View 1 (cartoon, rainbow, N blue to C red):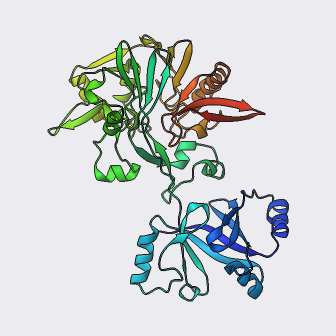
View 2: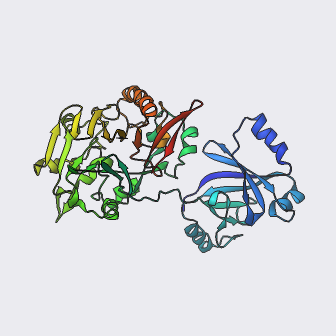
View 3: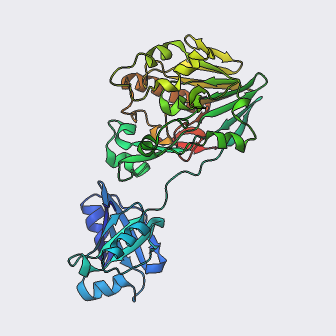
Length: 418
């Protein structure tokens, strides 16, 4: 069992006086209160760095918090430790003969499951174990029409990356409010390739990480490959794909381009031509210390050996209504894909804006090789996307596949469509 500090519970007698201190005097941000009906208590959470404070206000005279305050007065009531698997933690404690208040989990605040350890076993401290509500995405294929095109946000399952790396110089105290990390500092992400169907055929833009990684690598990234299932959701298989277009060749974007067949690497989409920017291929096949972990030769070299690659140069129209534009920044040749039909425009932005949390100009990944280049392109692009109402497809957001970037009263947000 691995446990980390989640919050400290503080019993209060007068919530207004408590807020006058924590909120008004200390300037801390207090979240909206939540009633925990089963425990007859109202919880006010106050983020404080990597943990939080929880002000506990009794909502009934016979609640545990009311009895505690009546007997001991206001003050620290308990310490809460976060665990990934509460059932396993309780089983481990029972096996060690630890005295428990709760032998089975019960519902807690924020949709969590909780259980208390008796103070006699914890040297006079009431310890709460908490398993947070699942924040994992429920992924499914999502389809929308764009003029004469049919666009489908597929998925290759969820995965996780280091939160600090995903947000670069943005302080954790800011990004963890939008996407809380697990006990390995990883945040929940998704891989969402885009299927484009038009009268010229079917194209998949990026194709996830694929299923070639070993058990250790899958654990590092919390991978659960699912692209075949996503295609099946819309009645298709890998052989229905005519073209596979790469925004860049990092493993979480183009690892699914190849697969193991009878122990050998082969193109995953057997009927497809693979469309790759020539300069990106050059970078990927000549990596350096800074990008070597992201460029895995088994993801793309077998494509050249199978003679299924078509290289393109610069910004150009790949197919009618499909246009690529180099952004640079993330990689030297990173590109985004404009989809235009019926007077409407959608843009698959890949790692320029990987999630909806990255719509602020300066929220740029630590993975970007040239972050200032990202910033310059991103500022111009988002201004245009807002003004022209481009539909944006987010490749790594665990909950939002597509939406419109809006700005109101100086605040930027995403209006979800898919």
